[in-house]
Image (tube, rainbow, N blue to C red; front, side):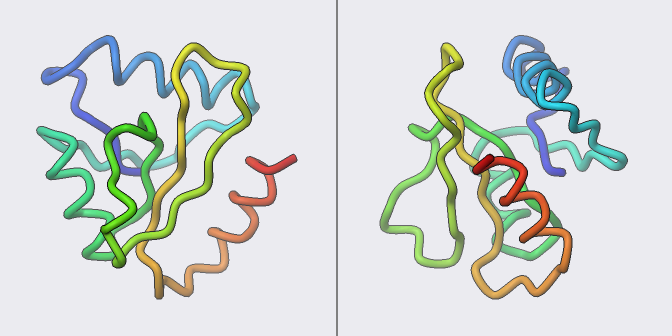
Length: 99
């Protein structure tokens, strides 16, 4: 999972981690990014997926796919990953999100 570094934004980082924990998902490995743009670059490079506010990604970014979470959280969160990433964990994760 790619996440904003807690050094850059403690609130955003903790909100995402708490959201994952509330849904019984605990990331095993976290790659930290210094900004949203850096996180998206890491996603585009195929280094992992990210969970972020839907306002952080543009529909014009054809290199990544996004799945919105249901709207029960204060933020409108989405998951993003590289469009042609064949990692078998991605469908498992997205099925968990959609449920």
